[in-house]
Image (cartoon, rainbow, N blue to C red; front, side, top):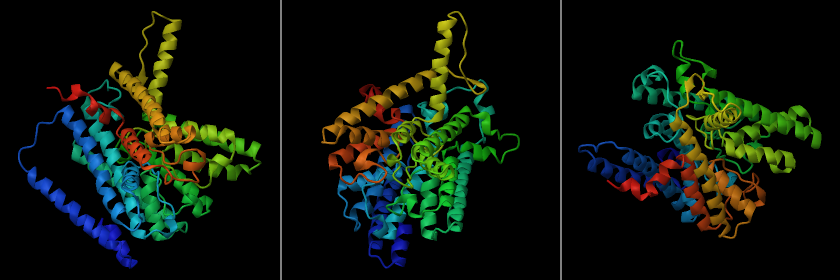
Length: 461
């Protein structure tokens, strides 16, 4: 919080007092927690793990809310919490308009929330969720021993490597944006939200403000890099350990990005007569922004054609790779689901055949199939339930459905006149904002991590 305070001091904006005061308040609370927990640590259990992960994310959102609510932006408690949760979950949906006139300290705070949330997501996916056996890299078992597949032998080395890779990507993106003409402030903010595949911008027009295809191409590249498993960046510096195509989800993700971008570009060339090179650049940028759950926009792509809208709607579900900063269903689950469908079709043709499903060189365990099946059931069940609840607040069906979808998949913009790429969530009632805040948390923590806390059996000894 002291970083945006310094920005406001440099701009002679009185909001610096908000950040310093919030920093002191939160600092004292954290010091009390630290003093109260210096004794023997409790024995780690699955139940404690689920509780800690969910609590940390909720507390992070509450902490992020404090300066937003007290500042000069004039947000309601629901709006401030929604903005903070959108930031810490790297969703990118916003209730704030007039970003160009906003104090730079608030803009920096929003970007910092997303940057911190991005590295938190990677750490959770690679270090925590496998232990809890809810998703991420625990979806399939290794035929070799666990030790043989570990990237680094110690967990502190792995976490340090992840942080280093994340910071290096952010710095490279900042340098690239600055070299292409962005101001240093804009470059830093957009680099943080690009690598975090999060999508907050410092301008109402998002990336369309800069009107530069070179910036769009650079953003597309770094969004893709942020959507890849961060383990590959650590492996790149280890001898004989770097194999980009070793993980099948990378092929699935990159293929989807290329095919869907080409589909939109060709449809625009045929339907709208847009020059193909221009259509390809803007189509790839906006498509990658959605499929990586970043949520940037260079223009209102819902005006291109119905065909483009259909592709963007499909991309909202997909997501990037497990172990990345992205949300959504993710490419590893799509690959495993395809394996399940193919195996069942083959059994229909050859009932006596012994069919093994594989994830690259590894056999997919029955537990992995079960985990993916449960996830899909919970994802679409939550999507339908959220749509019904939002409809009760008076939202039309398109707004209610796409708002739930974009929150659950942590994408950012929805569809329609209200929450589309040219709008935001400011006109939604407070009750709907609370519902969507919970939905963003569910989507970011892979559903099971939060929902299991609601089952009474979880707490029975």
